[in-house]
Length: 192
Image (cartoon, rainbow, N blue to C red; front, top):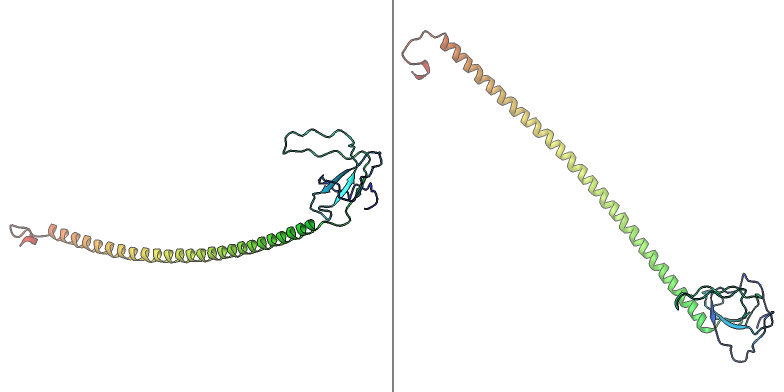
């Protein structure tokens, strides 16, 4: 057993009631009452270790609202506590190792997941860049095709307009020739 201590900075915060180990006698705290035995439940260097603490509270403990919600207890009256165990029990050492192993496995899994997400994000960005380049190339080709077709349509329209103008000129010339005609024959000239 260790010496009594009042340093509250190292006193465990999470604890539960425990039974007095065999061969250990109950002690009295500084206020003269028999101490209660507690066991550390906090995941720390003291997990599973038992200690004595003052049984008297500084104020009355708050009433529990339900069986599942338990309000924190007020601090002990005389702040007395004394370690019963000097070493962690085997089950606590095993629990800490297991939690450490699970934590490292979880960290490893998280790192692998983040790496996979980063690779997937990079692949997606590369795909988007390729698609943008493809779409830009398609737009450029479509624009070139549009300009080429506009030029073809413009040339066709010019050729059509030139043909119409030639026909108009021919029609004007025929009309002028008819008006200037000498009126020979019974029928118009084009039917003879």
